[in-house]
Length: 501
Image (cartoon, rainbow, N blue to C red; front, side):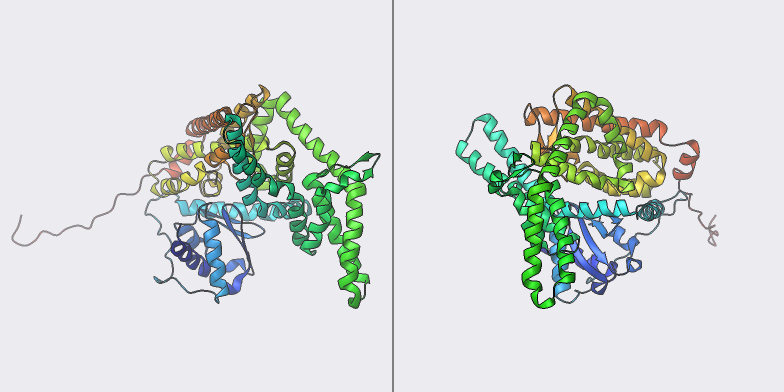
């Protein structure tokens, strides 16, 4: 999307979220513009949903507008420019009109969207527990790292493909260096973001976590053995940075202001670094190793059941906010093994949604409004952006959400069985799913075999999700409610004109 189009989208969004004065923070992940808003009641949700560039919204700890991977970075940059310039201006054509409701008597897409919004609001209230808030904050540490993980993952996959073909060894070495540089310092970035998220000085969090990847730790002995650079990985970095935040706060409370600039950073780095060396690296290393062994064992011994459970329950986990606990696990597996075997299985949940949406489209042949929503959301669903289909179609309908999960379970079972048979498929980065995950696939038998297994899982999810929804997704009462034909227009009586028959 060009800068002009990105700016037009940003100008359209700005007044619909309450204007510049209502925006406290702006960030983005791979597909979503994330806004910290002072007053969410000022958001015009209907008008936002009517914007062609908006694929959906998620009302979470931040207000998230789903724009897709091709547009989100550019729109975010233009929105920041508008805010820096003083809030921008209304669009030249005036307020964005909301979509008019069709005249059909059946519930419309707007009705489903409103129901989905209420479900999200209720889920947000249920998710406001200390454990789930902590999981959300931990996820916030890793979300900003996803673009770099994706870029490095694709470069690593390219290097691996060239190496397997025996082509351009010099280029392979260069690409390996490019892809590995970020990963070798991942602990530093995790420490920086952890301190930033939990209220410490970011650079101090990065400094303490940086001890973990320093090559010289190999000379340090703890628990009767020499440490290994990188031992503990992102788990150790997270724990070390959390400790650094607490040390910084404690020191700042008791140190005179005149000495704060010298004493607080010194105490934080000294004691935080020593704690990382003589405790956290070893403990986190054991935890990380356990995570890797558990994932490997799960696929090797329970591939069918594990795939079915993970693929079928992932979307309910998302609704409960528990999926955020998986982000550090994915990152740990990528750092340890080069890929995460869990993500391709979890991606099958999106395949079930796509198959389900296709069945809903055929079943509700008289409901033009819902069918139009499915047509606009289906391309995004194929690329792994599931929110428009989930909250705009399947979840508000109820039964189709369950049948979509059945499709996800079937796709997960397919990928899980392949893993149990020795053809495990992993992803070299966390973030994308759907068709967008193909460039990031990795496995013991090369990219082609991995793509075949993953593609087979997607196809299974599509087909089972479609069939389960088509035959079991609607009761007669639901069809009578949602597929009622539009009423025939009543034409006024025409009086005969004088002089005619």
